[in-house]
Amino acid sequence: MSQDSRNIYGGQAVIEGVMFAGKYANVTAVRRKNNEIMFYEVPRTSKPWIQKLKKIPLLRGIVAILESSAKGSQHLNFSLESYAEDELEGETDEAKLAKAKKAEEKKGWSLSMIVGVAVAGILSFIVGKLVFTVVPAAAEELIFGQSFSNIIVHNLLEGLIKILFLLCYLYIISLTPLIKRLFQYHGAEHKVISAYEAGVELTVENVQRYTRLHYRCGSSFIVFSVLVGIIVYSFFHWDSMWQRIYLRVLLLPLVLGASYEALRFTNALRDMPVLRFLGYPGLWLQKLTTKEPNDEQVAVSIASFNRMLELDRQVARS
Image (tube, rainbow, N blue to C red; front, side, top):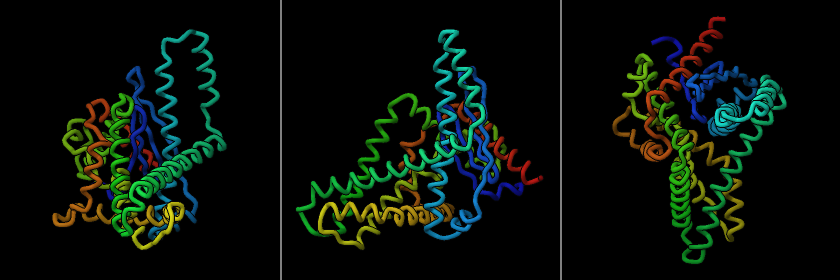
């Protein structure tokens, strides 16, 4: 395999497309209503101090999560705008002219716009994670708080409520056509990465042979954050619901960092028959967060990945 095959690549599904993060560039490909595949390309830049943080265990996970949220939001915003334009087809000539003028104004993203979208992505992740952390803790305290005093049992019940909360949420949103297609593109992303890591030619036929599940997925990270949280919270005692919630919020960075390390660990062990079961909970959750993609969706994923590789190679040669 080529030199760049030793790199670890990741990505995310967007509306009607897939984004892949390369070593030097992030690329999103989306399929428009006219069947055209459009690309959104952003060079990867990182401050030296951020690169240093990425080498420190626990801290590197938090940095990677926030960076992914910030950059991913830009690509998701691009896909949403493309989807919205397609949905507005059939409008009046005046509306089309206004839309074209607006698109021309947005053609070049200013630094303030990029920063604004990135900050919005980070804040969305933080708020979502806080809700997912606080609500189950409060619910368990209200339901079982006075029933017994065993902290470990309380933490296990809290983890169970989190899992149920997550499964119900994912199931409900997966019923909507738009999210179902998003989950199909998520599956297409995984298939392309698996095929690439296996060293096969990236054709639709070859890629479709691979599973839509992947050990190194954000869905697996969510499961690990629940399991790691049960362990971490068991070392701390609380006397009231508010103190319990305060501890959860305070310990959230530690839980996220440790969960990231657990994800890296299980990914490293996925080829060991005895230990690969450690990653199974994340794969089970992916049964909900991914769907089998069709050939057109896989083609979009391949186009995005190939364009990312092309840009990476261009920069590497320069």
